[in-house]
Length: 553
Image (cartoon, rainbow, N blue to C red; front, side):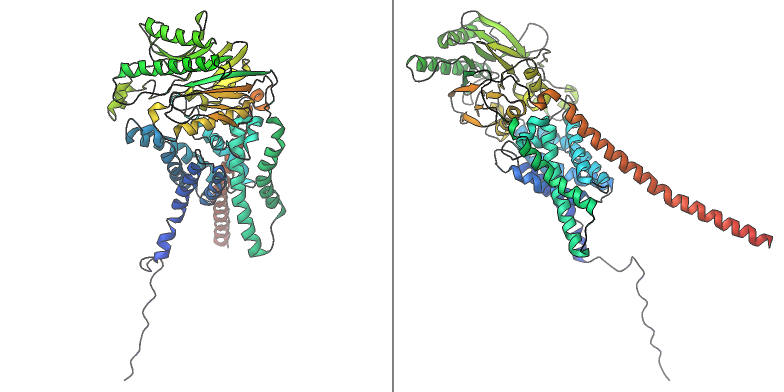
């Protein structure tokens, strides 16, 4: 008797058992790479002089998103956004705890997620690096405007103050500078992809090769070509300016005592400067700049505060800009810069036009209170001014952008188009301690200097105060939480860069490029979906015709 051995049936497809460990790990490669790309973007920002890390960041982001479905692109983009925004904005929780910081980072990361969705959608198009870079700028443009007037902190351009692409700020402002960085990064990834294809097949189509070369070379060539726009010559002569950093008192004083101590500190530093001028140790400044909130006591309502300011200004004998909080009997508070003349006293004011949501005013206060009771520390909201700030200080037209306003393209550009020969950014960063916030903001002012070809003076209550030339170079700066005075001769300029002249036009063109890419991608997707349906309909019609013919036979 013989036995027949029947082989065991092969397992059905899809039922091979648990996947290999390597396959499981590969599922996490793209999410991990997305997080890494965001972290590299963060590391490219000051105080680290690692601006070039933005290029591999965008290259990795391109690898992560290319060929993905839009939904996957959104998720991967959100991970990149968290990797970028969480460490970048950690300073926002310095005094109020982690909840506002995490909430803000999570919201801002949504814009990066939207960019990820768009980049994934356009990544299959010819010349996709150009469309992808445009989509990134589209997301930045939206983030700079909504919600609550926008939050442009973390624009790629603001991490490029030390970079080779900086001259492009004078060509088209922060949108063109950011576009160039993103384009070069995506182009580097595409070059790597084409190189691998060449090694595999031995051939690269000319069209894609040209697009790749242009994506990498155009930003670099453009930056070199823009170098003549970076000019720090004194078109309108020079001015000697003093920036006073009075510092803030140590913790432990009650609120009113701290406010008075800050005022006294700035007055004392100004009087010390006056003594140094008399002794010939310092040149006589043409004008003096105090920081934002250097007098949180309203000098119009408090005669004692007015006397302290007036005494210091008379001692130095130069018009002085005072940062004050004005508290009218009714209505909202005002974050105001006051032009104080040594003979006439206060002669002009500028009210901050873009007040900070959740810092200077609380939107949706009852709702926000459910999550954080710190909102009630802002017991009275600040109101926004409406007039462009330009003071005539001893014959020099000085443009005013108060602290947070330096992040907004329009707020700085307006002062230059209204005649500013020099820009000042009075700030108060004391609330954020020794965090990276003050260096991030200082980098913005360096980019603005090149963008508009103006000297920029940054007086800060607790540091870092700085004097910046029109080419973005810092000629002097203070240490943090150290009383100091900077006195420098700076060039004055009145010519307008292409970026100043064109305003929002470059950004609009880049947004249109992104919209064209997204529209083209949507059209291709719609055609791809219709094609199988049309083929199925054609096949069904052919089958029906054959059946009818057979029935007739």
